[in-house]
Image 1 (cartoon, rainbow, N blue to C red):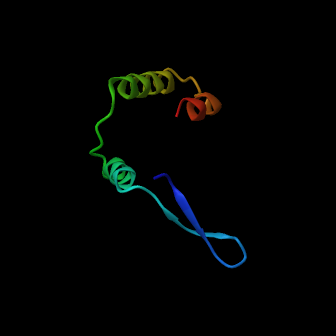
Image 2: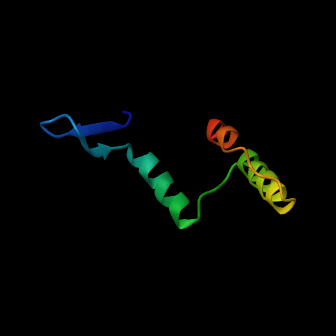
Image 3: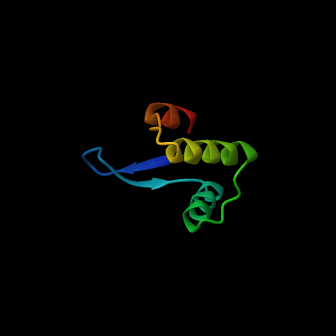
Length: 66
């Protein structure tokens, strides 16, 4: 089962239903106790290093990688 949207009579999205495992992963991330993959950690370290060096991040690339 994937993400499902609920709409009102006019067809506007008013709610969303997501699988419980996905919801729990989101909650874990928000609490800050999510387990990052080694690749996620490497990406995070690279981004912080670039910021510390005064470089700007490519938001387009970050969004595409996400």
